[in-house]
Amino acid sequence: WKVTTGSLEQGYEEAVFMEESIRALVMINPGNPTGSIMTRTEIEDICKFCAKHHIVLLADEVYQRNIFDRSKFVSAKKVCCETPECKDLQLISFHST
Image (cartoon, rainbow, N blue to C red; front, side, top):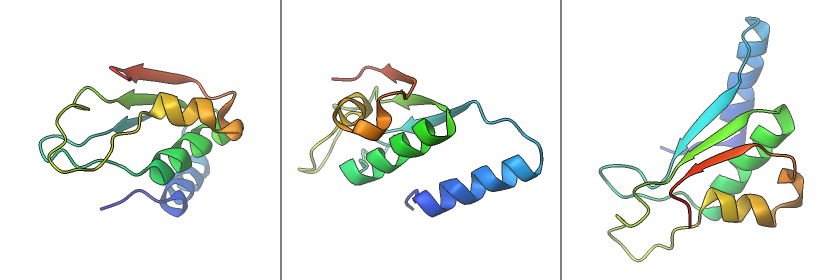
C-alpha cells in the first residue's frame, strides 16, 4: 500500500465537495510494527500536497530507529527544508533527525 498524489488529490476534492475542512494530515513513517519506510519521493509528494492546500503536516517519526532492512530513513523535516515548493509548509515533526 502506497500513498499517491492522485489519491491525496481525490480525497481532498471529495472533502471539498462535501464542504469538509481539512486542517491536518498525519504521516507515520516508518510504519509500526513492520518498520517499512516511505521513499524520499513519497514524502516529498505528501509535503508538496500539504503545502499546496495549506494543510498542517504531522510527521510521526518516533520509530525511525526501528528499520529492519538496509533502507535509509529520510525525515519529513529534511525533505521539507530541501524542497522549494514546501517553504510555507507547516510541519510538526515528532522525533525527527
